[in-house]
Amino acid sequence: MNGKKVIAVTLISSILGILWKRYYETQLQALKSENEKLSDNYQLLNHWLEIRNEGRSVAEYFEHMGYRHIAVYGMAELANRLSEELENSDIQIVYGIDKDVCCTIARIEDVYSLQEELPRADVIVVTPYYAFETICRNLKQKTDCPIISIEDVIWSV
Image (cartoon, rainbow, N blue to C red; front, side, top):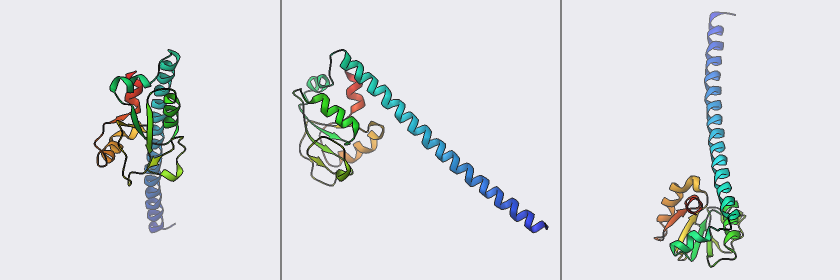
């Protein structure tokens, strides 16, 4: 092999090595982030179960704060658990909000997108709490009611 071919192969190998390393680091960071999110969800759900095992409910938080009519942002599993928990309480979920209204799995009947006019509620509870800051910024452009995280609700009971 002549010198030019050796240099070309070495250069290509180096570039491929750098690209592979960046890809690997990106994937590793994504996995670490997902692992942290799952760990946080586990801790949150574990505490919620402890509350329930004590015969208590997150409804206590809303009653204490004077929130009777709540809206829920994020129509996935945590929204369903919250809905189930509040079914036999004086707290009413008046509507839900989701970025992808057509693909929600929520058991909440009325679901709005952020592009729609949002009805009045006493408070909006954000269930994807790991993205609370971004979601809160977006919601503040649409409403002036308080916005809280499901994480804050559960850890406050």
